[in-house]
Image 1 (cartoon, rainbow, N blue to C red):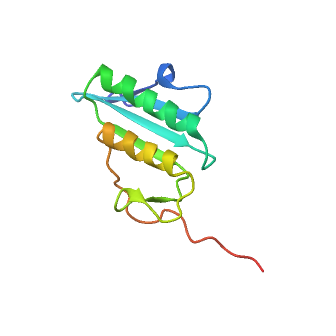
Image 2: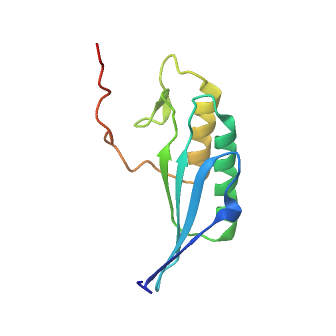
Length: 123
């Protein structure tokens, strides 16, 4: 065990209706850091976006600690580079809601390359 890094699960900010986990990391001599993994399974899932926004609001009320948010948000109509909707975006209101959430909480995209290989098409 390394006493310089102490972590704890923050289940008080998690919601039963969302596949999301939050962890608080205490690095000796530094602020707390919050890390989350989130999976939004369906493109029409509004509940997970609501849960994400609520969790971020609760964290912002606690302190000014850094947040690392990772996951699969299932937003095929979102243009990550320009933070806008793509043409023919499915569920534009949910995509815009996600954009508002990341903007309202000062989050920025750090991964700018594909993290998975292209889909393999079988014939």
